[in-house]
Image 1 (tube, rainbow, N blue to C red):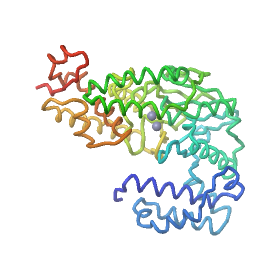
Image 2 (cartoon, rainbow, N blue to C red; image 1 turned 120 degrees about the vertical axis):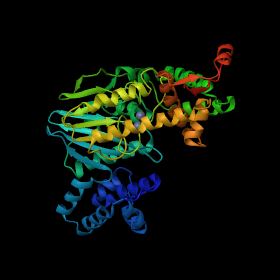
Image 3 (tube, rainbow, N blue to C red; image 1 turned 180 degrees about the vertical axis):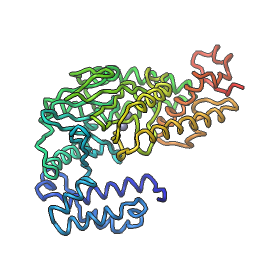
Image 4 (cartoon, rainbow, N blue to C red; image 1 turned 90 degrees about the horizontal axis):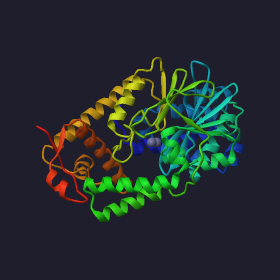
Length: 419
Ligand SMILES: [Zn+2]
Ligand SMILES: [Zn+2]
């Protein structure tokens, strides 16, 4: 299959989700203020036929057209079982838990998967979106689809637990509203609970820590000021939220789902094991390699923890399906973990080669990712920083300008590969 640019993939997936509105009743389409203009989406998909084909989605598109046109319950149910409807997809674990993935647009063009796991006497949700308007809209749509298409008698208001997989805003930002609207207990790993419960403190302290990191990375003063504003602004809407259940590695939640602590991408990141299904959040994703940042910014981040956490999940036996916090399901979790670990080993080799002559982290980021704008600049510095830090921890990089670093109050550090 030809490689499809990620922008095109996102657009086609977005259009397919909207077009699937054709499988929903007018009451749902109008009821939640959703206004899914599915005929328009169908037309746009027809116009973009080459892209749909390149994504391997032609058969799905045609099946959708037939299901809408025929109006037969059997055709619609078959489509829903295979592809889901309007971003909500159903899976069943070996132990009989129904696991629903709800696509939720948490920021413009940024889609998260929120999971609703249902069993007799248990209604659990993993993550709660960002709290943004689009996030609330898509959660409402997801719950409407759960009832109308999949026959589930569950409402957002009636959840008993919401487990936040980690303290990144697209995964927990909706927690304020969730607590207002529902009686769900909020469960977060002990290393991330503080981010929610002492949010203002967290933003201030994290901003100071990233500022030190960027200064040492060689980011100029004026640029650092801009980056700091950007860093804080995306997170200003949240109010500190008390956590009801503080989780630790190995805990059981709901009817016995196992919590696996996997620090790296985020200090308090957890995967949740529902029988043979693993909800991996941002630890393992189907296509992109989860973002890394150095533990110089936050303890329990960094590549050493990440590799360790990949190995830990690699040892779990009998996982037949992994469902990430973004992107599509992963059928071969073990193969995907190996591919991600290989990717980082190659990236480490690349960074080591770049540092054959002395470089700052900012120079490494530029060499790896080129010119970046806005938040992309922060992500590039994090990613480069995590790799440089790990190589330095392993003794494969040395500090090239040690005398200058020793003398300066706010030194910029240059790294060089050790012979
Ligand atoms: Zn994350
Ligand atoms: Zn995420």
